[in-house]
Length: 326
Image (cartoon, rainbow, N blue to C red; front, side):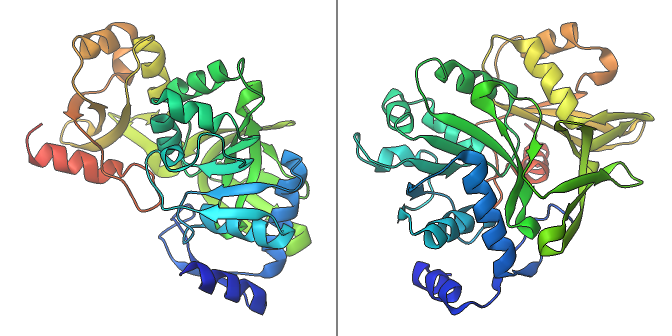
């Protein structure tokens, strides 16, 4: 949808039609009621202690993250500007801009932090909302290093299209490891140990494919059900393996992910995919990680493939690299 269509549709009071990203199954087109969107906007404003904001929208407005930034602005009569999504949206704005609130995907933040001028612009914001995918240990360390130089608060969101974006947040600037649910959100586990979200105030109940560890004061995200590698009967959670690898290669700053491929002997085997081959990385990983958790295949590339949502397309990247014999 174009910007004027989004505004006109919202002002008409009709339910919002939008495509999901696949968090709860195959991507599909759904309708979100105004009541849910307003509930989400009000609870985000409360949780982040937002006032009258000047919003920079630099993620796709046809996805729930960008769309909700527009709806919040319309609901609260905030000033807002929309720029085309790019790897480093800070490059498009003035050095002394007056924006206070922005939403980014981790991929964008990673690129911003590589440019000192972009970092200066980023630290003029009061709140930076991260969503769409996980925040790696390396990126988290960089965020927390910034915390000593700025009052900017970095928030990591958990949610999905079906819940009108996030239903839980963690403050990365304060080194929070657990997501805390917004007021009015009730969480439980299904018989498959996946997260179930209920928002009674707006009649929402969503069963997810996400595996979490629930605590009285929040939850930790462990990964998706399909992010498990069954290698020789041992189930490996990709999120856990990636954290182990990050610790093993520290202080080397390496962009990578893990995935899986079929294997005649093991059933599935763990695959490591990194940006630009770095000497001795494979050796270092094998030395510092138990063999059962170590990748069985290492692939290297100059760039990853990405989904429209901004998330890495792990399956497509691995398939491409195997086909070209990386």
